[in-house]
Length: 234
Image 1 (cartoon, helix red, strand yellow):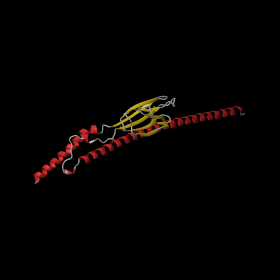
Image 2: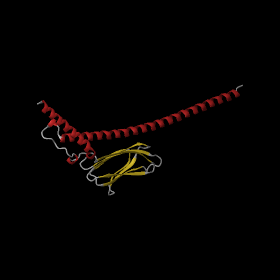
Image 3: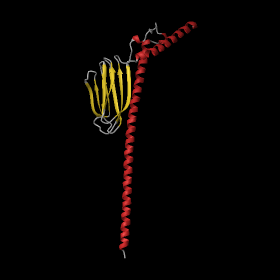
Image 4: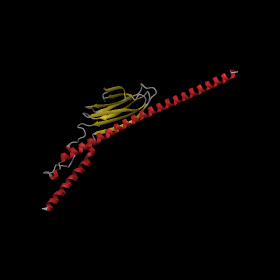
């Protein structure tokens, strides 16, 4: 009896190991349809730059951007479809989040425009998330050779295991995306703080310099008046 129970326990462990190994081997294909791109670059003054992102049919594309440095903290933003149709246009914005759904097959054009600024360059952070048809979840063909065992051996089921892994992957991806966005917010706040600190320091030094000049001028005037008064006194 003990030997039979030990054999069943060993088979159960082997099944769990096979499930984990199958998920690890199939995860590259299972999550291949989700593409995440992050980029931070410097947009020169009076320039417009565009980026191209390939999408599949009936998918989803999410674009989020933030201006994290530069005077005014704003840019013009547009998204054009592969057919050249203007989908989204924004003027003088510091940040934005846009979702294109469903997408068509082809290259989308994402543009940032700073031509309205003749002197100030802008530092822009943006993130593009592209998901294929059906999102991150893969079909049954992405789990080859793994069939649900007869009965409820150790209460493990292939479908439950796959759903748990898919849910964990989505939450980890969302956490990583939120961390990237928070880092961009932190960089923008830090740049704004440093810019304000420089302005405060500059005008404080200028005020101190003016006060010193006024004080020296007043002292010289007082001494001159006293000297003139001393010369005219009998």
